[in-house]
Length: 63
Image 1 (tube, rainbow, N blue to C red):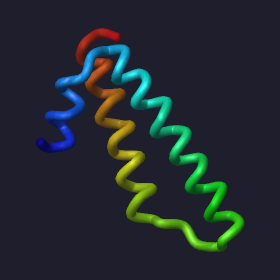
Image 2 (image 1 turned 90 degrees about the horizontal axis):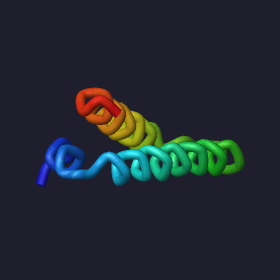
Image 3 (image 1 turned 180 degrees about the vertical axis):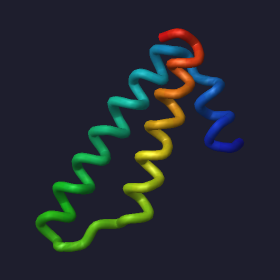
Image 4 (image 1 turned 60 degrees about the vertical axis):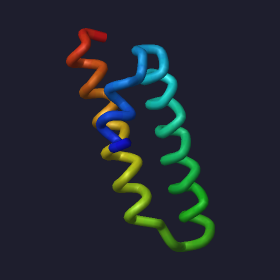
């Protein structure tokens, strides 16, 4: 299943929870990177895109 299909199949509550979870993961990755000195740029980009997809789907549905 593609990332878009996963998001389109979620309920509004699940989308909201997914956005919160992904934002937390993004903060954790950045925080860890500050201590280790390296940022997994590809992972950060993937998380940001997934957040954008979820928020777009919420907007389309009329959040």
